[in-house]
Image (cartoon, rainbow, N blue to C red; front, top):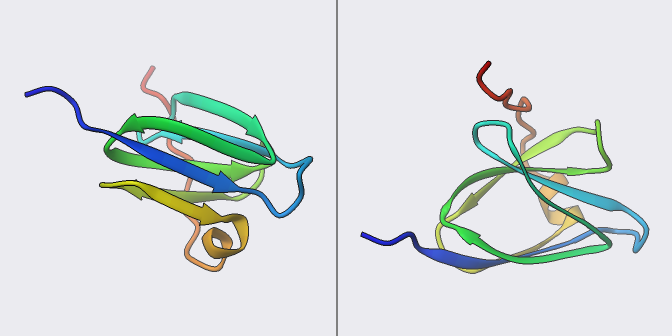
Length: 84
């Protein structure tokens, strides 16, 4: 079975905010400033609006578009750490 990819759009409150996307194992996936538009495999991710800031979960099962305000209104999560 081939992986399923979905469009993901995350929009920061400020156009100068860095958006950091990581996977559920703690590995870096992608970074953008202001707006992150990508296509990634279905799965569980984490997002930070500014490196080292609070981490929030992203559950991607289909196309998803969210603003920073929508994401930070939900629960935060611990940053996963890659296995050693």
